[in-house]
Image (cartoon, rainbow, N blue to C red; front, side):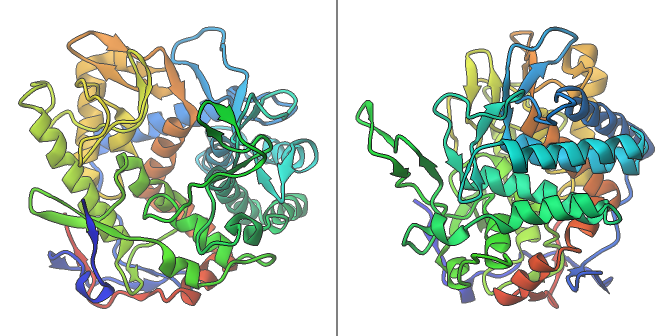
Length: 449
């Protein structure tokens, strides 16, 4: 089992010194200029982004803006009526990208953002500001036994706060986004503990084949994962903030694979991506780590892990790797590594590499270009890459998932321009929270590429 090193033992990985630093508009420092992206890769990413942005516009009713959780990769009638609250956060962010890159008319994107934020605020059920993980795309009502989710609400708020700054001249968007943020009672979600609870259900938790009395899930966001930006929003919140000591209560276990050490939970690679989609952790560190460097190292370890799988699945090599939670031939699977998680069967998940583009741009860009060129229209859909595919079985997922499309689109834009980082970090609540928990410019900043 991985163990947590004391803070003084956690140091940045070694590499070539990055000399270039300049102040960010929000007071956070950026460590380097953007990596040069080959023209053919840049064209692919541009096409992928445009198709992904189309998903978030087309797969949401114009009257509600509630993004469909999954949709057919090829033209067909969607079977899902569920909206993912996290997917809406990605979708709001994608609308900003669509406006910035002129994939859609800026006024159309702005109007859709207004509609979505107003519907979320006025029509969707919530508990102390936290929202249900899945809701009906037409009514906004809770879907099934879906839980009130802290992390999914946080991902929604990331999109809302990005819109607040990108469409800054629109006072209604500013007001709606601010109200969504300010009504969240982060203290309530602590439920008397040092870390945030994962969920709350009216029926309680499903234990021993039956629902318990209503209340909080016993599980907490207490181990390093995609939780970082959520905690910063909670600590910097203008209302009901949680104390800074919660940041130190997060466990930061050290994973070792192939001689590489880094902070990680036992979870798929997406945990090293989501927090970085909005929050700019480049060139700064707290007393524990430089988290951007940590995600670079985690991606490198994941690449190495995948290459070891090539002994069993020979199509996995330097040109084709990447596994994360995704659709599979037998349903949705939470798989990946290191350490190995789930029953891995050689399925490739494009969002695993697309979501890590800012960390290993050359390697991840190469894999995506190879998939597009080698597997053609089988792996390429109206909304970008299919969710997953298994080459030997000639299986290609028939649906795409909103969070996988979203991670791919946002991280592609970040590696190309840093667009989301630039605007999200203009929210002073975030930069203030980073200062409160001890982030400082990383003067010993090194690059591991």
